[in-house]
Length: 85
Image (cartoon, rainbow, N blue to C red; front, side, top):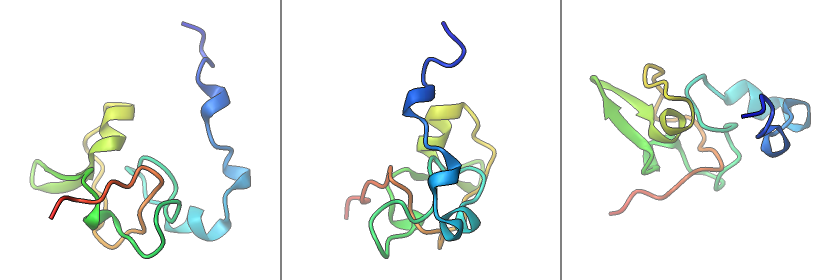
């Protein structure tokens, strides 16, 4: 598999607002605030419990890394899926 096969689908950080970069935490699947306005990670179906901490399951699916905790109030990303009520 070519090393940069998916590079055309990646977002260039230079095109993302500085505010979004500052609010993004390691462990998020995409940049903070790129999802629905006013929504946070805690309202997302991808925000799950793993070893007594809350992680982004979408990030885990994309990277295989399940060790990065995501705070509840973090503005959601473009992969936001509303948690069923």
